[in-house]
Each structure stands twice: as structure tokens, then as C-alpha cells.
Length: 386
Image 1 (cartoon, helix red, strand yellow):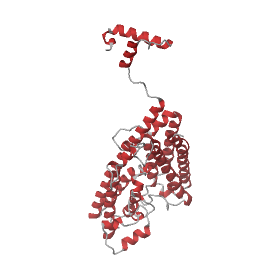
Image 2 (spheres, helix red, strand yellow):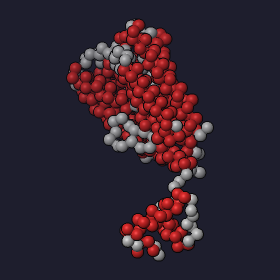
Image 3 (cartoon, rainbow, N blue to C red):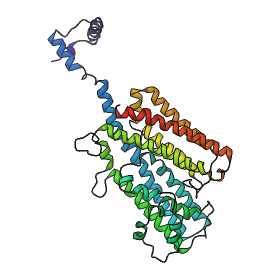
Image 4 (cartoon, one colour):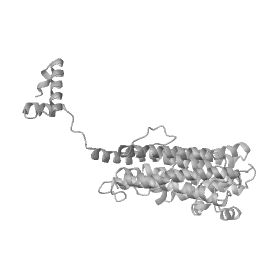
């Protein structure tokens, strides 16, 4: 029985003060069995050690990453892909300036969540080929044109058999925007329009499959959100440890930063032409760069930009627990990279022969590489437990 319940509030306060004073002086009171029993029954369980707390945070970070970052981002992609398919079909039925503009805008809108998913293009996006089907680039214009002049029947099965560089975002972009963002509503032939419709429908289905692969699982595979969330379980062969899952998340961000700096920006800078800009047909490559860095930011902060869901425990929380200065450094470098990209004239495609614009691109590339080095040399070893 807890005898303290019989004491008055005043007596209880006095006794508490006395016990605290004795504890401060180092005077032990545990020799009294009844006092020890009272303490055990009235107090909370002993606080977890720092090591235990850190391990607990790691597990939550991995689970929350799937639920607060990946799934909401892909759900947004599904919504935008559905709108793209709808507006493309409206344009195909009635080719006009208004319906073309609506389809072009829907394409740009769908691009946002996809580019904001680039920091976690692992799991089903890679293993099941969804990434390539949605966003392989550059477009193989020669083979796309061969499809358009061919007499072969255009069907969903025929679309499924195409190379990844003949479908997805950028072939749709090529048809909607033309080779230099100069498409006119009446430019496309009946076959062109049929091809465009099938591409948009296939894109929509692939986006749905990708999201389903994370939420429910496809092809007999478990939901990838659960694969990630159960990292460290004895039955999890993909992520035998929690640190292995954390490493996957950080490596995803590192890979995204490397691609933006060295390929998406680096290759066009070498040639000083639009040839290797990813979304050059629509003149929206700079928007891609920014959304890719937003993807890294979202992955680090544990959130999805356009989701109403609250953010969960994040890499930022984990890093801050061990090295608060490093956490602030990462967040500062993310903002510096975004600011450097904002300084580039948008759209950048018409500016690829402008020295001032190229200088700003170089500055942005440098800022992104700085963030890349920090993630690779400091954050990655931290999550790996090195």
C-alpha cells in the first residue's frame, strides 16, 4: 500500500523537499524498505540511456521517412499524373490553344512532386523500373520520330514495349512543347495525338503502381514502407539493421545532389548549350534543379512539401542529437544551394550563351557540391555509426 496517499498536501510537499535535500547531499534513504517501495510505486521507470534514446530515434526516423516523406510525395504525384492524363485527353479530343496550355501546365505540375522524389529513388522506383518508365532522359528523338512515322498499330501493349527513352515525362514533354517550347495547338497529327494520349495514360498508371508499391505492395512484394519501417528485424534481408536503412536514405540524397551538380548542371555547363538540359523542351530545367534540392531538404527534414501531413522524426533530429552544429550546417547549406539556384535567370535555356548566367550556374553547382561533401563526409558516417 502507498502510505503517501494518506498524507496531507502540505505534509507531502515538506516530505518531498526533505528527500530532495538528502539526495542532493548524497544521503541515501533506500535503507528504509517502505520508503524504497513508495519510490518504486510513485515514480516513472528509469529514464533510457542516451544510447537507447538514440537507437529509438533511429527507428522512428526510418519509419517516419516512409510515412511522412515518401508516400505523401508519391500520392501527390498520382494526383498530378491523373490531371495530366485528363488534360492530355481533352487536348487530343479538341486541339486548341486553351486545351494545349492546360495540358502543358498539368505537365509542369506533375513534374514538381516527381522531381521532389529524386532523393529517394530507391526501392521499387529502381528495382521495378518505375523510375526509367517515368523519367528516363534524354529523349531518343530519332526513335520517337520513327514511332510517329511508322504504320505499326499504337496500343497500350506497344507503349509498354518501347524503350524508356521513348516514353515517360520527356517524350510527353517533347510532344506537348515542341523542340524549343514552341508547340502550336494544331502542330500534331492524328497519330501524334494518339501516341500522346497513350503515353499519358501509361504514365498515369505507372505513377499509381509506384505509389501502390510503397503503400500496399505489388507483384507479391510487401509494401516497401513496411520493408523500410521494419529495418533491423531478423526477417528483413533488405535492411538487416536500422543503420542500413538510414544509410540508404542518406545515400539517396547524396546521389541526387551528385546528379544535379555533375550531370544536370555540369554537362550543360561543359557544352554551353541546351543539349543536355533535362527539361529543355519546356524550358523548365531550372525548376527541376530547385525541386531536386527541395527533395533533399524534405528527406533531411522529414516532410513532404505539398503534404498536409505533419512532419515526423527526421535525419535532422538524429544529427542534431549527436552534433547540433552539423545539423545547422546542413540546413544552412541547403538554403545556400536554393538561393544560388534562385539567382540563375529562369528559364535558363535561352541563357546558355550568356556569360553572366553561366557564372551563376557555376556558383549554384559549387553550392550543391558543398552540400554533397557535407552529406557524404559528415552525415553519412554519423548515421552508419562510424
